[in-house]
Length: 254
Image (tube, rainbow, N blue to C red; front, top):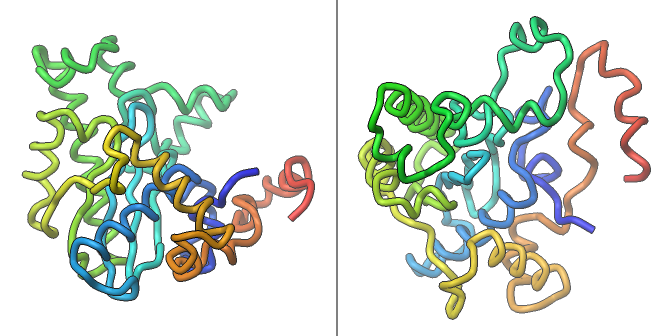
């Protein structure tokens, strides 16, 4: 059993879902739940006044989530992202797929920083000791900046930009993100639940969703965000002649 991804939420308008599969996986939704709780607690405001853009920079995929009125209203998932990830190619030019011809699922996990630099060591990457590392660094960071700028179409007045994920704990990455994003809103690291400082943000969010769905401490938050009303699948919004028959191969029940 899985919690939903962003595309299954009723709080995201249907027109934003057209021809999308990845608007943020269950992981990204979970960490966004933590973000809503965190901002409401920090500012002492009701959920309905919460508004932020969440930047999740993981070891593989990056993502940006938009929250307005305490609800997820948009998301840019890792396979739709405008810039490369550390491992992943992110958004793919359709011409590239056509040229290659046989594009497999594993191919989405390559084409990022590691493919450019040939270096898996994060410390060497952030030092930017050679031209390839600098190019890869700029490509990844500018992609994040572009994603945040585009998300302001959906969240016009975010109170904050929240940073989460493995790479945001690296001093050089965090400082660069603050420099690049501060013109959009105040930038800070996502807070943690009390007593959970050694637990990943995503894991905390998962626990909050599970707790809320069974009527626990976070019930009001989960209901406010409409997570209990999630419906459908990620395959429901594709409009392309060649997609005919694809959902039937994967969807067993709704």
